[in-house]
Every structure is written in structure tokens, then in C-alpha cells.
Image 1 (spheres, rainbow, N blue to C red):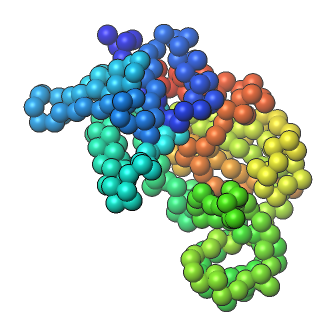
Image 2 (image 1 turned 45 degrees about the horizontal axis):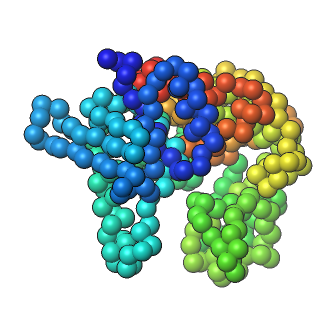
Length: 319
């Protein structure tokens, strides 16, 4: 029966945001099979058959407490899954085993064409390139700050001198430690004197600083829109969450339509957008996180974000 079809939820072990959605699904009596790819082995088993039945994919995903029939999955919420690293194996064996999990478990799930994906991992990967994001935003009519992606020290210095007030942003967040201490990459001011020949090693992203009065985080879930105005004195508000104030923002219709069009172009059903508001009230595009965090915003504002996710996953389509 339709109401007994499960939702697959792939995420890490400690994920409060996923817990919020599961709570809402439980209220609807929708079965949920939660798993983490890193648990492959005794705590996670996948079995799939191809070419032996009328259905293209037949099989199961099993955890110690739950089983999901792959032919009956209602939807898949691909939240924050972790892939196994197999540290107990030799380097060659660990790389081999990790690849087999990604292409075995991952490939089996990607083969499912019936359930709704929030969001499909391959779509998320395609949407996660900042230069492509900037180009699409401009095509759709958003205000995009002048941006340079380059590994040329000369061009970087010239860009910063020309525009005066520029910042540096990473093109992709990656785990990084310095002297065994985890560090992260913020949006930071940059001057021409800071540019040296080390820029040649890899492309860097330089951008004109928006003279903003606030940031806006916008979460789209299906056709639902949740916009939160974030006010602080920080260039990058992620540096200090205790310094932030939150209010619900009401976006102009043209901005809402543009954000929906953005996700539609990327075949995504949800995404977290970062915008900046300048002193004239104009909205500036900053970036899209196709799998961004949002749980703390529901706690701060009371907006029914987890309810919207549960409704979408329970329904099993993006209408």
C-alpha cells in the first residue's frame, strides 16, 4: 500500500536536522529507513538484482532495525551521508573498498527512477560549482557582484586595484588542518599586497564586496519559500552565530520566481541560497548550497521548514 512505502534517509550519525524531519514523518505515520553509507558491513547491507525481473531494480537496503524494499521506496532524502574510509585496511585496499561502496551502494540507489530525490547526489555535484552558479544567476537576472576566478597573480592584483574593496572566497570547502588544528575558509577582505606568486598553484575566487546592510538565507523546499534576514556586523556571518539576529524576510515576487527558476534549471527540489541586501534594498546573488543547513533557522524563527520537508518526502513528488 502507498502509505507503507518507506522514505530512505541517508545521513551521518549525529544529525539534529534529520531528526527534526524524521519526527515530522513519524507524525504522519510514514516509515523511515535511516542509514549512513559509512556503516556498510554488519550495520548496513545492500542487495540488488538487475536483469532478472520485470522491474529494472529489485533488492533491499537493511539496517539492524529496518529494511527497505528498493522497488517500493517513496522518496530519498540525501542529507549528510558519510562514505567509509576503511582506515584498518592498507591504503590500496581502502581506496578499492571505498570505490566499491560508492559505485555499488551509490550506483544501486542512483538506479532508482521511481522515488523523489531531495536532492539527487549527481544533481547536487553538478550544482556545486561556484563559477557555474554565478553564470546561471546572471542569466536569470540576478545582481551578481563582479567576480574574478584566476590563478594569475597579475590579474588578481589588477582586479583588486580596479575595484578597491574586494574579498577572497574559497571555490570549494574542503577539510583542512594547520598544525593539526582544523581551520576553515571564510570570506575575507584582500588587498593587492597580499597577492603573491603562490596564487599560481590553483584558481582563486576574488569578488567585489557588496555594501550590504544584511544577509538573507533563503530555503526552498518544493514550492515553499522560507527567507530569513540575518543581521550582524560581520562580513561572513558564519564566523560568530552568537552575534546574529534573525527576522523573517518577505522577498519580492521576481526574486522568488528567479530562485525557483534556478532550482528548476538544475533539476533540484530544494536548496539554500545566500543573498545580500544593499542600502537601496537590492538583492545580490552570493551562492547556492544545494544541501545546506537550515535546522537552526527553524529554531530561531519558528518557520515550518521540517514540516515542508516531511510533506515533500511523504508525498513523493515535487509538485
